[in-house]
Image (cartoon, one colour):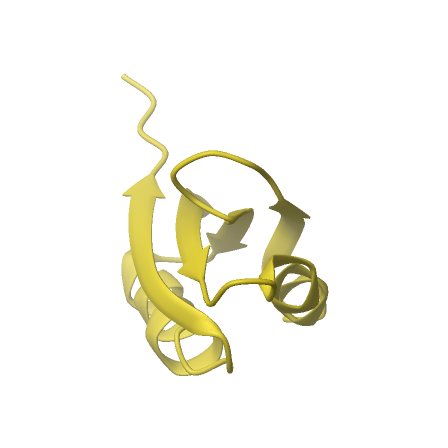
Length: 78
């Protein structure tokens, strides 16, 4: 089973493209785009379970320079 999520990211002013490019290189990230709106970068990520997804977000995404806030939205299929 694969767990998927969208990660909505706010960045420092002018850092969205740089952050998106850095995140795109992280294993488990399938999409990273800089966008306009209340968030600056939208990421789609996947992992083998919720714990691995949490580690990806906390240890690899949130530690990148230029990120000020993240919101993780797991994908749920009902």
